[in-house]
Length: 168
Image (cartoon, rainbow, N blue to C red; front, side):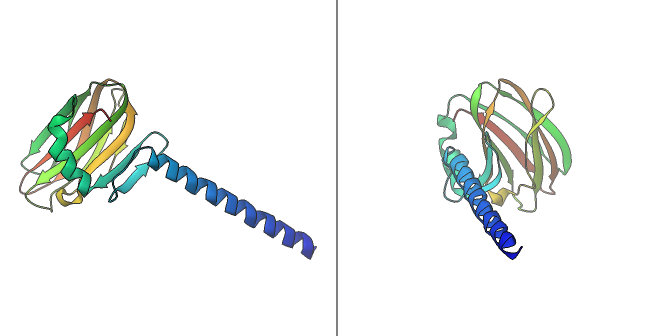
C-alpha cells in the first residue's frame, strides 16, 4: 500500500510539473505575438487580446499619433465627476490597436472605462485610470462599426477621456 501511494505521489508531481511548464510557455507565446514594450504592465490577456499600460509607449504613441493612418479618434471633456459614454467608429476589420488616455491637471482625477461593440457586448474594460498611470493599450481583433466607450469619472478640476483606434 505504501509503495502504491508513493508511486501515485510521484506521478501526480510529474503531471503538475508538465502542466505548469505548458501554461507558462503558452502565456509567453501569446504575449510575444504582440511585441510589448519593456515597461508594459499586463492588465488582461487571452488568445486574441492583450490589455496593458505603458509610460514609455505613451510617450512614443503621442509623438507618432499623427503619422498613423487611418486613425479613428473621439474624446469627451468633463468639468465635474459624472458617468456617460461616447461612440467611436472603427473603420477596419481584423487586428486593431486601441488606446485610452485620461488627461487632467490633477492625478486625483480618474476614470473607470469599458468599451462595448455595436451589439452592446463588453469587449474591453479596465479599473481606475489616473493621468500618471500611462495610457491603456489594447491589441485585439475587431470588426468595422461603432463602439461605445463608457466611463465613470471622478474629477474636481476637469478631465478629458480619449480613445484612438488604429491599424497594428
